[in-house]
Length: 304
Image (cartoon, rainbow, N blue to C red):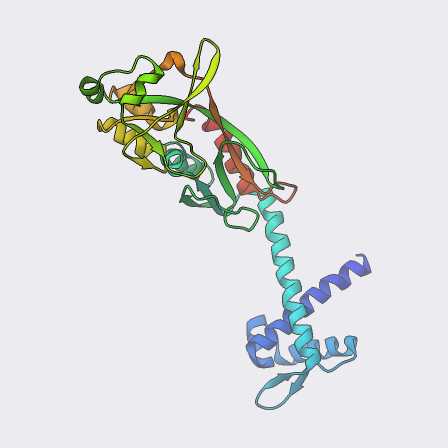
């Protein structure tokens, strides 16, 4: 065996032994924890001190007291041992997906499209603990608030990795009951006489886009209710409150069941929002993150 390798291995064991001695408070207690004899533990500490040329521990019949050098060595030992644990965990993760996976998704899309897939994923990867958070607040992945976030729309430049999962179009909808009472708009301008439900987040504008004879234009709309997610707006529309323009994924079931009817489809500009999984990429990306992103890419496209 290479002498340097053997020496490094011995030093790692010495660090662990010394940290255990300090944590246990005596050679005898450390010996029981390490399944060694007290004399063997004491000799091991003696060898560390001889190699370093300093006294690390002051012995007494009642307790062990660390010297200033002993305190510095203990801090270094704990740091190095923690680094070793992290390195081994990362390597283990590369080989087998395991551990806690923190996922952030928007409320509507998460509930309607992501959550229904989690049971299948959990069955395929039983060693992964899924920690799911549904929120329309952007989380800071680089700061460690999540491992994977599912984002809509354009992405800001960053050091994060983004993988496209799909895209979703928009649709204008209303319930048959609402249309029976208020009439069906035939032209975009007819919306001025209707209660148009809208989004309330800052990047949303109270205008809806349209296309007529190849020309794009926008129309200012007004309504009595605003909400922060398409599922809520679709639900309000299905209840006959007004007309909504939402992501098609959020009202697929209502349209199929006839509870909502698409409107003004001849004027739909065909605008779409791309959907990405965003995460910290690179060679050290944990296997659990790669497995989840691959799973979403394979299963989410049809639902988005």
